[in-house]
Image (cartoon, rainbow, N blue to C red; front, side):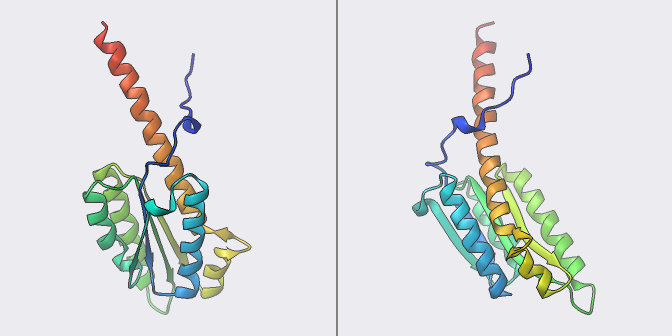
Length: 169
C-alpha cells in the first residue's frame, strides 16, 4: 500500500524561522514581509521564534541567508525582495544569481529557503504581487517554508521508523 506522509501530525511550535527582507522598494517589500510573518504565525510558528533581518537590496539576500543557514539554528528562511526591470539587463543577472545561490544553500544546509523575490517588468506588476489582485508572494513564500518544514519533520520521523525496523532484522 502506498503511504503518504502526514504533514499535519507535526507542530511547528519549536521551529525558528528568519525572514530576510530587502529594504529597496520598501512600498513593496514591507507588504511582502508583513504577509510572510502573519502566515508563519498562523501556521504555528511562535512570534518570538521569528527573526527579521533587513538587508539593503535583493542582491544581499543570499549574503544574509548564508550565515543564518550555516549556523543550523533555524528551521526555515524566507527571503523577500523586489527586482524591477529597468533599461538594462541588470535584473536578469540579479535574479539568476539570487535564485541559484538560495537554491544551493537550501540543499547545502538542508534547510528550507523560500525565494519570495518578485521579478517584475514594472512597479505595477510588483504591487499586484505584493497584496494586489495577484495575491501576496510573501504569504506564498512563507507557506512554502511551512510546508517544507513539516515535510522534513515527517521525512525524519519516517526515516527513524525505518531505522527501528532495520535494527530488528
